[in-house]
Length: 93
DNA sequence: CTTCTGACA
DNA sequence: TGTCAGCA
Image (cartoon, rainbow, N blue to C red; front, top):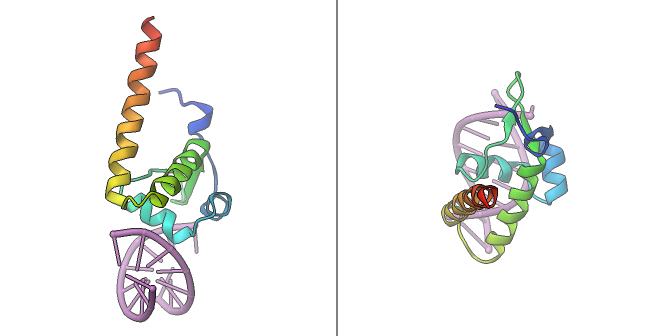
């Protein structure tokens, strides 16, 4: 499938963590909890895309609201699905 | 860079 | 439960 530019991973975990103001260990935890799924290089190192950074910012927001990682996982899943549905809906009008 | 483990509020 | 530090 053709990938959108925003979905292309370019940042190493150290860079991504620096940008969003999070610890590297946290980013790995978020991935393990299913909140995120950054790309991987052939060597197995994570590559965070612009979309991933946006997602991390949202995680920080929801975290500040008092949601736990399980709740955030649900919210992100719903928001992603909603965005997809909206895109399809606007495509038909 | 990776995963895993333990300590702390 | 989430965060952070240290180790292999």
